[in-house]
Image (cartoon, rainbow, N blue to C red; front, side, top):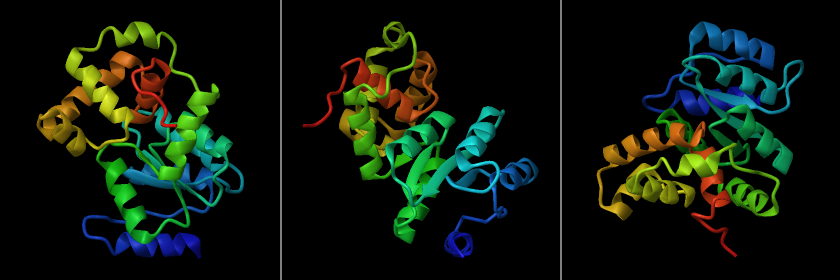
Length: 208
């Protein structure tokens, strides 16, 4: 019933198409390999291959789809494991339809999507030492240009490319170029890992 409801919401949106549905992780992996979707909505708890394992396998391959994890569970371990597995976003199932659609469009555009509650947990986890930056992040930070460092700080503050462009007085397209350049320099897979690096190295401090 939940899956049918999600499919109905997504299928009714302009520019979005439901490529397929699967009832467990193994079937989802097989279906994704066949239809090659842009975005996968992934549940955490499923029979057989769970959503976290399926996410890790999906994102490990070339031209991997973006994965948006949906769950009724919001314990820290699910959030962190989903992000470590390669998820681009994490959204609770009680989010309203508009938030779901916006999240799909956000991750499809190559950006990370975390609900405000999840973002708060991520920052708190960093502050408590449960999360750490990728190895050699300090050395890699030195490879950033001054503008890339400015962009990284804004990314860590949770701003979109458009908001970063407005804050720094540069075009949105230029922001995207800087983000795409700084991620591999930091050894970060996505904006979420880049955010962890920024907090870990003291470029941004958790709000108190």
